[in-house]
Length: 167
Image (cartoon, rainbow, N blue to C red):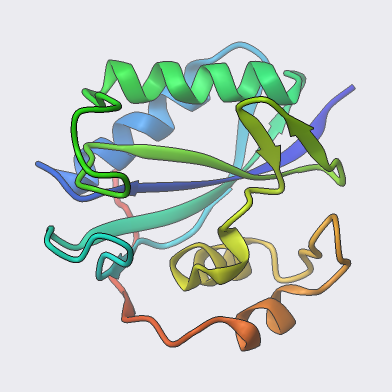
């Protein structure tokens, strides 16, 4: 059975646009994954660890026959392939690429190492704005709140459109 999953992608090291594009290409090439839509790119200031460069963020919707854990493993593998190394630096510090599963159908998953919906997405404007662009009908699987309501509850964050990702 196929599910729609929503991912958030971000990068703040190196050629940020190229890394986002590469991550999308690797997702699209994975068996059991079809990218349905991709948001524009948004530029955002870092939140939890401000002593770093700004991020480029986008959201994408996938149709997948993978399960939630399989999709997580695919995302983690793409991060490693594109140069991300976990540990050794500050949490929320600079990263080549970050892929987060925001939602997976209407499922709520609480397992070791995997929480869906993403536990912090509701407070992150840099996730919600791109998500609204590709899924204006999105509703939080846990609370049922719509994307507009979620956005109204977020704190003000510096975020600005940075145009389409391009070829």
